[in-house]
Image (cartoon, rainbow, N blue to C red; front, side, top):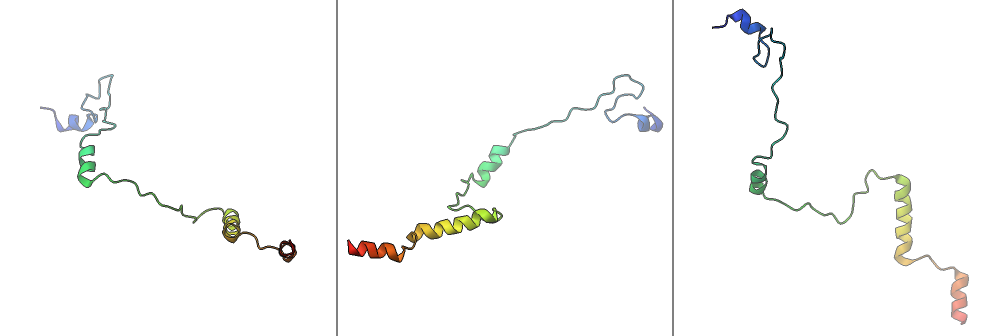
Length: 90
């Protein structure tokens, strides 16, 4: 049996401290085991597709311009009085 003092001086991976090649244990980086089972159990859902993107946090100059462009798209620009008179005469 190893003494208590030798156990305390031993490296993490269990190799003797006097040995020239002490290597750490390789750890697993990724596994997909059981992932698909869990996803199907919860139910695979479609990502919600929102009709309009949120405008919060957008550039204020852009939003101001968008507001005015929408305003004029609705009914068009108001006609001048001189233009409306010319149309009546024809």
